[in-house]
Each structure stands twice: as structure tokens, then as C-alpha cells.
Length: 275
Image (tube, rainbow, N blue to C red; front, side, top):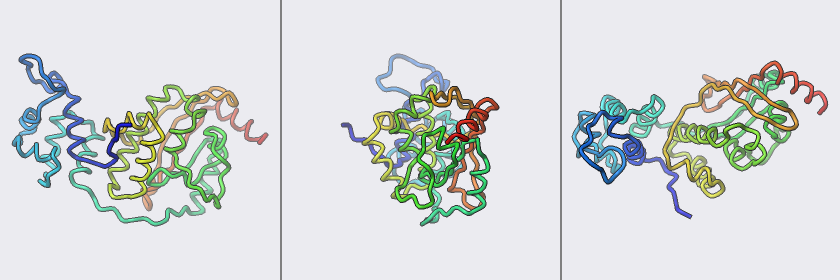
């Protein structure tokens, strides 16, 4: 098996974005066939109005301490999305995060998650560990019954990557998984020294072919509101509007809410009443 690094590298990210660009994307006239994909380093440097040796130092991981303006110029030259531009800043100028030993949930949050029935809702921590979920989430996502005394840590990314039945129920599963892995990478950039994150990435590299294929692409995306559809033979066609909320007092926690359509909510209520 080919070994793929799980670490965060500014140089690797820049190189991946540079190699995906075409000359046409960058507005550069081509004068014949090129041996390597994408732009050359000197072309990116020229577009970003910086020296080639200076840009090369960035890709080679040397400590050059780029300013925000320089990073924004590079982002523009590489045609980065807003999520990618933010990711570039995090890699180049990492912010020291306070270590959180435990992610405690208060009673108010627990009651809120349960009050959202029949809309599936759950809470994940900074490394995407599932910390709390309601009965509707158990039904829709085939989760075990929630207990405050659960000893084994259930991780949302691991669960999505390894549960074959869950994946088979979701339309365009692989495309959706690629988005989720891009979101996982975006979160990881906030905590580059978190050992738990590193351990999980190494584990996912071993257990999931899909993760091994997507992780080296260096795609990043923040979690956004989305319309979701899925099918489950126990429930039928399901339709949700997915939103993600974060607590101002604890932004490491994400509250994932799947607001069901009227038909879906009625079916979920009916099924939950018989459980």
C-alpha cells in the first residue's frame, strides 16, 4: 500500500493547487506542450507579484513568514475559493489553540437536541466524535441508543466511512463523502498539533480506500447548509435541510440538525411511536 502523509503541509497544499490550474485558467498564453501539469512556480510568483525564490521557499516549507497581503495575492494567483484562501492563511500563520481536555455538554443543550424530534440532530466534537444524538438520529443514521455512560467513543467520520448500509442509502454517496473529507481537513487545519486528529487520520488511511484516495487531493471546504435526500427501506424516501450551528461559548462543538420535510417528519413520527 502506498504510504500517504497525514500531516499538514503548506508546501503540499500550494503545490496541489498550482498543479490543478491550467494556463487558460490563469490567463497565460501557451507556447507548446508542457511536461508537467498546471503552472510553474515562476508563473505563480509572477501572478502573485512576488519573487520566484521566495515562492519556492514557501513550497519547500522554509520559514519565510508571509504577510496577509502576500497570502491573499497567492490565493488570487492560484484561483483559490474562499474556503481555500482561509485554509492557506491557517497553514501559513497557524493560530495557537487552547487544549480542551473534556467537551462537556450542558443540560440545556441535551434538552434542545431531544426537543428537535422528529428531526434528526446530534452534536460532534472537534475531532468529529459523536457526543450526543436524539432518537430520530438513531433511526435515520442507524446509530446505537444514546447513553451518557457510553464508554466507547463513536466517531462520525469513522462511522460514515465504515458503515456500508448507511452509505448505500445516500444518493451520490462518494461525492458527498468527498465533501465531508474536505470539511474534515478544514477542521484539522485549526488544530495541527492535536494528537487525536493525527491518530484518526492514520486510522482512516488504513481502513478506507475512499479516504486514501481523497485525502491527498488537499481539498478543503467549510461545513455549509445543504439539501439532502436519502432512501432507507425501513423509512422510504427522506428529504432534509441540513444546518450546522456552533456555540459561541464552545465553537469546537457542532450541532448538526436535519430538518425533515413534512412527509418525512410524519413517517419518522409514526415509526418512532412504535419503537
